[in-house]
Image (cartoon, rainbow, N blue to C red; front, side, top):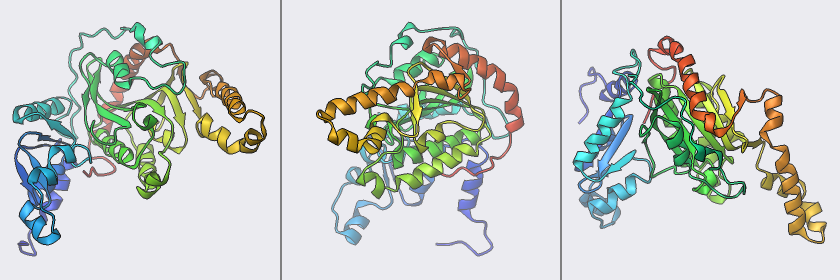
Length: 373
């Protein structure tokens, strides 16, 4: 029942709380209706895979209204809601759910008026893992393990991933560099080549707002081929979701560092570089208005069709244009700050953290744009 007309709106207090202090929630049993809305109105949510369901309405209501006879798990179990973005993470049981909340809060300040706690770091800031020099395959169409890259650059065992089950082409989470909490955004080229889907864009937008709300520097590891294409992508309004992410990134005030690991193409790439971002590029980096394969297909379709061996001609053109997307000319033209040996990534980012930490106190207070779940 609605309250008296003079009563303050409960939803307003929830929104004001999200704008001021970190909120983490756990679903440990059946959560339906208003409690379900409160569960997802948070900065981080987790549900127990063994005991929890999140429901707009329970089985009896659904059967009466919709004619669907389903169990609570079939309606709103973790196998559904960790894949559609309703909740961020799943946990094996209640104890692990609470442990995840504890981990999340360890990266957070007490409020927007305080800075996130910096921990003593026992991982050398000058650590340079040899594996980084060869982790990106020379074959441009072969994928690599971006999470492995993160493990070799960030403070050891500090990466706390959020939302791994949905928007899977985008990786988001919290970590530390030389003890400083940071937001991490990366592409997973093993899922849809890392392209930005509608779900991935919404996931990234929400994560950027989290970092902006709590003054966390953002580090992007870029392997972005562009917005997802095709009929499914068009039906999902990918361009609108993607444009929101691009514009959200452009309005942030927190420091950004962006590491061009491999691809950086199309309109979607703009979302990975905040205002005045510190940009590092690996020798494997490629950039341009669109990937070589798409550009060749559009610009040279007649020439390819007229060739004696169309496949050979296509390959020749792709190799020729790929060479022009090398990061070396862009570095000479000051399009990146540093062209680095991949092994230098951790030392360079740790030095960047030292430079931006004095800026962070000036960012305290409410964010220019409110956080919404």
